[in-house]
Amino acid sequence: MVEGSETKKVITLETLNSMKALWLKDKSETTDEELNEFYKHISHDWTEPLHTIRAKIEGTLEYRLLLFIPAKAPFDLFHRDGNYGIHLYVKRVFIMDDCKELMPEYLRFMRGVVDSEDLSLNVSRELLQQDRQVSKMRNGIVNKVLDALKTMKKNDDAQYQTFWGEFGQVLKEGIYGDQDNKDALLDLTLCQTTNDPEELTSLQSYIDRMKPDQENIYYLTGESRQAVENSPHLESFLDKGYEVLIFAEPVDDVWLQSVFEYQGKNFQSAAKGMADLGTEEEKKESEEKRKEQEETYGTLMESLQKELDEHIKEVRVSSRLTSSAACLVGDDSDMTPQMEKLMQQMGQAMPTQKRILELNPNHPILDKLHGIYDSDKTASELGDYAQLLYGQALLAEGGQLPDPGKFSKLVADLMVQAL
Image (tube, rainbow, N blue to C red; front, side, top):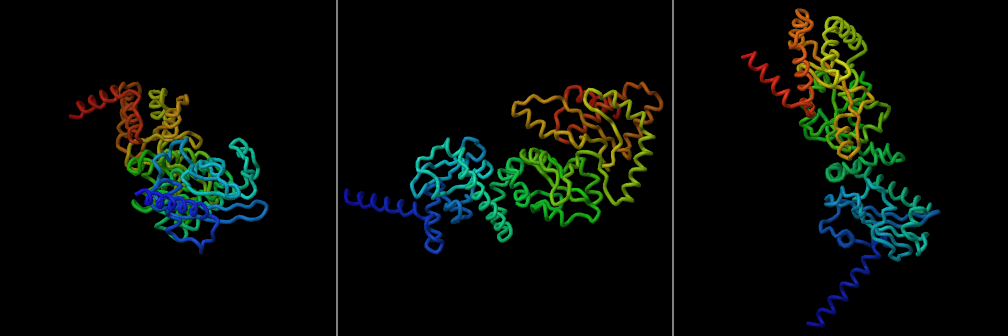
């Protein structure tokens, strides 16, 4: 019994010693089974890794790396104080097992070993933060990881789709956090799209499908795909055959604030600015029609705006609505409602942001309101209908009513009148 235990202990130690040297071996000298066992040992993950990255860097800096992309996201992926899992060795001597200095936050899911020939054996975490060699090593390691992901995306779509499903949300943090690699990360980004309910698309593929006269990459953010698909902001885009990218993760509102173009095409929110779609001739025709509508409904819009002055900065006729009566839009520089909510959740005091209420000039309700206004410009029901239109627009985008009780009463009163 004792002899068996001692034998087992010796075998275990020999195995661990062998595993520590794996990153020093050439690819031909290691098996997939050895690499998988090594990954499990250093990551405490009992599933096999999705992908392995190994490299030997020579030149002014010399170091080896053996890195793994897990098949599943770790439970602490979104815990900022979680373990990065990068083991640092110097000349094959173990230094630390959580070397955050070698990997940016948006790659915190990576696991593996980096072994340097140049760092001092006495290096501390404080010195690592200031060491120029470490900074250069970090840049080299990040490039290796991004290159590996680029190759995976090009050569193995199924594997990359798996990776994106687990880590795409984290990778997108680098778009606003790592300006040096922003373009590479945008190349790697996959997006939901109105073009297909199931498949994701790259930004380049979206551009390849753009209409000949299309100048912008159109997108819409929301709390879920379903909420975005049901948004009135999409009506004219879908009606005219424009594909719109759907972004439904909290990080999307953050990085979209810092990225303005990709491959020469500007990002444009379907919920901001004016929805000027079509050819130059169609845009000109639409502008002329909008001017006529503004002349027709201009004074009514001003009256409704006075009723809603506490909540909005303008009421105007819409060119983006085809079936809904109303929607709320922002100016190009305005913060999205999702971003505003995210900032509030982070404890940041946010000033009240007023947006624009757009009304559908082709909806029967606007003609009815115009008739009431022509008959009596001080009619009390104008204020009630203004509040209902504003509340309807808020609810359509998943917003929160400022006074749910008052809105409910207005709806009930309207039902009584209609019955």
